[in-house]
Length: 580
Image (cartoon, rainbow, N blue to C red; front, side, top):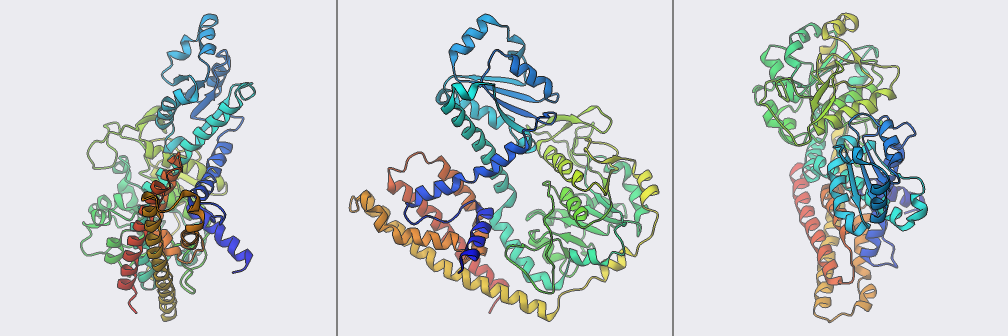
């Protein structure tokens, strides 16, 4: 392997797992920790982006030092209404003197203000609790760490420790979000199933190629509680716009006799729930390669795949390279980003409330819901409206996405719900009259999309067999790693192996780790085990001492044993989908 290719592979692996090559002259734990620390680069990027001079979008500020209170008051004036401030002052004497000389009761009585006092070791639990409470999915891109002027000069070490604590909070939040969203093992199984079915279906690039121009309106219908207000008007869009309905809203429309052009689904679960009403499988689906296997099986031959994992698969003749596009976390934001990236000029959002109805309902036709993450946001009428943490995250996703496409028009025809910055507010009727008067042969485009050829099937089979071979080789290495690890851990525990001999006796074990995790010989296995690696990242960061090598090796043994089990499952599954 040449140096340039090796570097490219290392970068690709780092992007996926945040772990780089293990240095041969260091122990496993030291190397792992050193590499994992680099994951803070993402947190640093977030901090840079979230700390502009204009703080009108900062939703949470962590301030180091109380000063005389004036800096915090000035900061409040620059923040939007409802923004929270957490102040950490390491010196009790400063607070004592400040209470004698100035009145800060206005700050202390503010529900959005928190104060933690004392050395970091004493205040750490309070700070971590407040950070967990204040920094959530929807505002992690709008959280900033600010020192009171002069703080870093007085408390150099404390400032560094606080920066590390703040970055770790952002990092762990990102890790948790990724872990919750990916269900990685299930996702990988869905994606392999998609690969086995790909030649029988179409891909989204072919749909883009079928359009005669970029002026075809794209209507994205979500399941917000306001959908009942304007669902009937969707009948007027037949052959005048490409109407895509998220799976959650499909049942209501079909029961009304409205057949969408496509139904979108992108989760590895929930397929049966959202399609049970379509007993004969008449709908056509736009799915992600990670969509529930139940949907892929039911609608095989009537599916349009949004994408297949670009890192693992390149199938000649069946798909082209697709540029990355913004995904704000929901199916609707995903669709909006996909079609804006493809160059479409008009996107119309319907049922995209991102807030509760006045009666407290979260979705059309569903029971009332409540969530501990509920917060107030601005509605399209300018008045406060109650929303939920994950919806606010989707809202911010739209607001990050839309400004990137100034030549496109994104219309919010929801007629209710939260205000989505960057959209043009219109009723659905007005949007139809202005943007949806030209006719297009949309149904014939979709029905005429090509399927795969014999050559495509052969290419897919070659890819699958290569991954089977690579995964089988990795399985043998894992078995050896697990065995070697247990021998060393038992020897340490029984005092048969001195800690000073650890590096020499573990050389082969570290090399196995190096091959399995960094040589990229089995990328499919790495994807299949990504949730284990996410967990390992968190656990490794929390390890405070490496003095007890047997404990460390037990932890590593558990990781490799679980990877071995996963690898065996993966080989069985590959054998089912792609028998020799």
